[in-house]
Image (tube, rainbow, N blue to C red; front, side, top):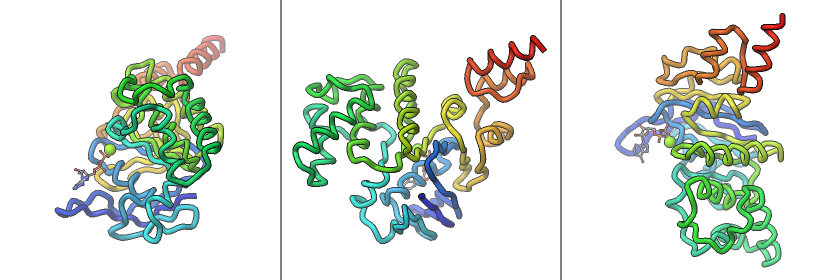
Length: 264
Ligand SMILES: Nc1ncnc2c1ncn2[C@@H]1O[C@H](COP(=O)(O)OP(=O)(O)O)[C@@H](O)[C@H]1O
Ligand SMILES: [Mg+2]
């Protein structure tokens, strides 16, 4: 479990980015949402120790991030940055994914196994010799996820994983996220894309101006008036409300509900 306890973060220049935020993360898909500038990335960087609390504590499986190095924490908490393409530096995909495990001092055999497994998990088998820079946006995002998976972390933090991707690439990234959830990883999905939240999340934490204003189930979340937080409901939910078919997560559920209602 990751526990965030009364966390404050004040940047130099006195920008207060997080105000007394508390939450826990277990084996679930937790969506961290909020408009631009609400503190999502700041919170994420606390979970693997990239930032340290101005006040309060972050405890990762019993380890206080104040007392642990980023290297130590990143074995437990993997973090895929917003715009990961700026982070690639190896000449090919294999070396890029192998970089982390190599640094852990693993054997050549173990490294190869991990790279193979990570690339398979994100459907990038066969890309080993490609240059990371030759990949499409969606492939780069999946490569970044593979780099993190090769470290075998228990928790995964994905910062805006589908932002800027076309529909097909976004779909393949979502596929990967679903698969990881099934494998029992705790996943924090950071996004302002409400369609993505509706499709994937189980729990939602809403940040607004650095304050946690909501923490609850996906169903409860979409009962909020999201316009108050500069967010908007997915079209699918607006339509389902107009037709009184209740809360649905995707088109299939919508159609099933609608047909049931028409037959009743
Ligand atoms: N390195 C920094 N120095 C000063 N202010 C920062 C820094 N990084 C972020 N901020 C500010 O902190 C607030 C929260 O930013 P951020 O966590 O990136 O929000 P989000 O990810 O929700 O868009 C914003 O007002 C942002 O301008
Ligand atoms: Mg951000």
